[in-house]
Amino acid sequence: MKCFFFALVLGLFFSGCDNSSLITGDFESEVYTIECTNNACNGTYVGAEFIGGSDIAHQLSNAISEVVGDKLKELYKNGRFSKVDFSAISMTTEGMGTGQVTYQLTIPFSTVEEKCSAYTSFDHVGGWNHEPALSSRISQLKKALIPEGTLDVSELMTTPEGLQEYWIQWKNNVVQSKCADTHE
Image (cartoon, rainbow, N blue to C red):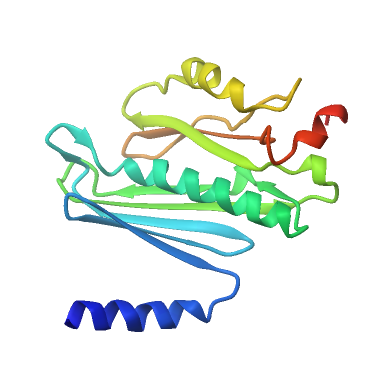
C-alpha cells in the first residue's frame, strides 16, 4: 500500500509538468530514468554494467532512443519541427569496470523552420569496448526511410570508459510521407 501511495504522489507531481515526461524501467532490479522536455531528453542509469553476461547498462541507449523518437514525432505533430543536435549530445559512464556504473545521457533538440527539415525517428548502434556494427544497423533501418530518404548518422562518440555509440536520425516513412517529394 505504501508503494501505491508513493507512486500516486509521484504521478500527481509529474502530471503538472506540461512539457516533460518521465519514464522509468527495471532490468533485474537495476533502474534507469528518462525525462524529456521540448528541448532535450535526459537519461540516467545507475547499477551493474553487466548481469549474467548481458549488457544491462547499455539498455539506457535502447530505451532513450525509443523515447527520443516518440518525442520527435510529438514535436512534429505539434508543429515544433525538430531534430537531434548531434554535436551537443552528452554521454558519461562513470564507474565502468567497478561493477557499479552511472551512465548519464543527454540528447538535445534543435528546431528547424521547415517540416521536411525535421526528423521523426531516432536510433543508435554501439556498445562497450568494441566497434559498433554501423553498416549492419544502417541496412536494418533502410526500410523505415521515406522514398529516397537518407539516414543522418553522428560521428562515433566514445566515453573515456569505452562506451561507443553512433546516433542515427531520419524522416519516418509514415509520419513524414509527404516529405518524400521534397527530397530534403
